[in-house]
Length: 228
View 1: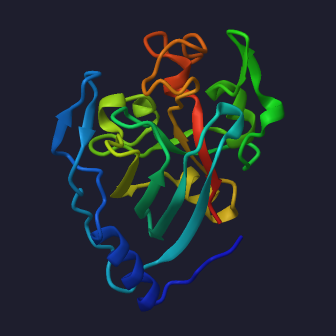
View 2: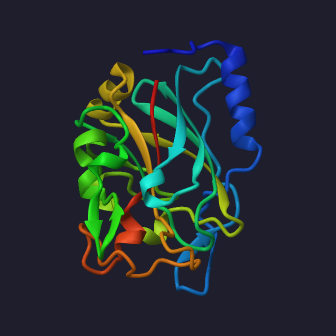
View 3: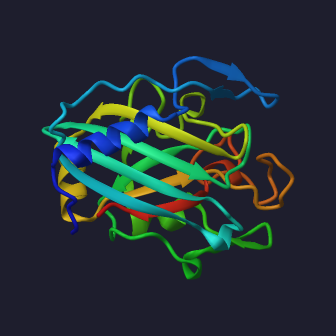
């Protein structure tokens, strides 16, 4: 596991990144699909200028899901509090993208060979990726609860009006999540794909395997990275 340390310079740089424009906010509008999207940075409380342990993840696209999503994530731990910063691009515009810290799996991102066939197409569902990345640990919502109960709280996840979004939030983590981050087995997963390129979530792959009121496109992983 690579740790970047807890120096003033690291903390200052990361705080500057967060201040530079995270779009995960409590003020929200509504897009044409009826989803809420967030357009202003959410204030993030300081963990102190001395910072803490910093872990990073390079988010890469799940190519089997025809994804082009990619980005970066950073988590700064101090006691049981965490600053979370994310920058994600290449995602579906004006639709919510569920995002989580997952653990208690194999501590890796899923691969194409683990995908199933859905409506005649090869694609990786949320359940098919669970052995690799684990179950829900932390829901990286824009407001309110961040636990497993918010795994698909679609009105509280960021959307991307221009195909990209920034996210910043300070949250409290459980002991299990902290241990997983520190031992290198925590995985950040962003969900929501546009498999057929029509600019919206639809039923081209059928219904979601985890939520009867959502499509598989809405819940399938689009980008993934292991925190180190």
